[in-house]
Length: 79
Image (tube, rainbow, N blue to C red; front, top):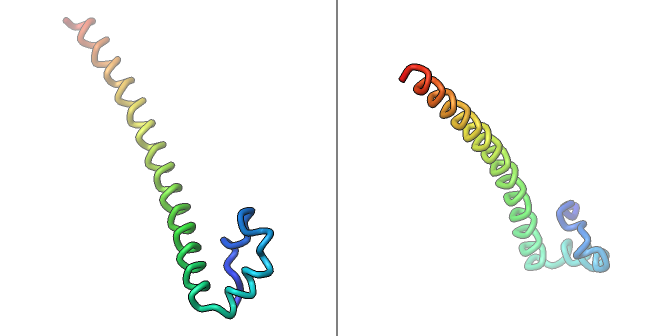
């Protein structure tokens, strides 16, 4: 059973040997680490979704503004 890659980070680097051992022999510690890893993965997943949705939001805001301007120009010319 390998230690998940999410545990290899700067915050734990000076304790990495102890972390590896505890992960393999201490079920409670392994559970905490697994919860941490799941949390990190979900955070990354939702961050990507947020960025994608934010980009779509910006595109539609820009399109709305362009169409608003077109409508005003049309009204001014025809009114």
